Image (tube, rainbow over all chains, first blue to last red; front, side, top):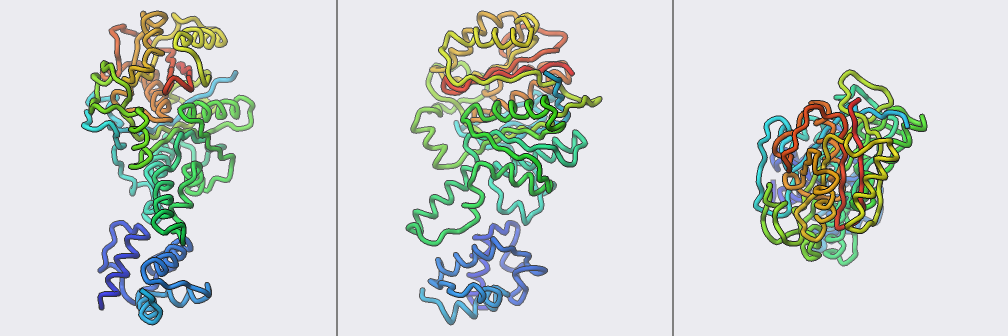
Length: 85
Length: 352
């Protein structure tokens, strides 16, 4: 697990107020929505804001979201390829 | 007017709910006081709880407790009184607007920042699609919500109403009340708060909820006989307001067994109470509560919680009484509240 994985997990826990949850509670390949972490549509909007605020990435195509926000691994992969800060 | 029964109650304040039983109260070293933390996780799902501000948590927790006590699954109406609404999320949202230079904003605090978030979240949790109304009338918010509740029940439109008052504090907005002189500079709580001769009071968070019903239950606490709200009167006029209110209910002042007053230690406005304390209520048991739980725009709901318990248990806890008049049988309780000389509210409770 690299630093970006940990940093992203910390940001998600903080931004989504996942109280009582620790970085070690989120698996890298665990689905973030549905049966995995159980996030919902409001959380998806929060993640879009997080990408823009922390990494300078604007999501132009909303359909990309499903793939990008699948897991921590997919988010890290997308951030590494597209970050501007 | 038909009788409206209080069949379930719950309150969260700066003091433990068992203050009524034990008489033990906490004193505070700040003029801005938080509500006592509750085991919210016991009644609210964690994934819902994580987005809730203090007001929403308190409102939902009290609602569920009051409904459970009354044996009601879904009320016919949900009516909330809140002076400042979800001010914590409003503040968060505005702060993020400043920080992002009005750029992309996180949605949660915006969604949760409206005054009617509490009523909305209660409806979502109960899956209740019926009448849902929030009154935001400064310190007359709870009386306005109560008036609507009584009208719904008295006209036969609804038989069961969940009504409550809720307000929270927040760092910046409550700070404005310090700048405005509403919050006292001294750090006084307990009985000494009512004796001070300086401006300002102790501001706090609270939520008090009630299940009102057209039908009496064996365990009904009290009846809400009437409520009235007058926005502005002169310092010498509370006596006339109270006498007229009682007359409209075919009552004489001697029939009131206890009066719960909103004294908050603000020397500029406690005169509204002192006049009637010395005149028409000199032979009546007098109570105050803001020296224990602080003041906010919907704190009169806490006074109604107190009055309902006093009638149900026929006793006045020592910590609340501010004179020495004893009373063996408590059938009728009058609540009088105002804030900054405005929004004079009267609530009349009686034995069911």
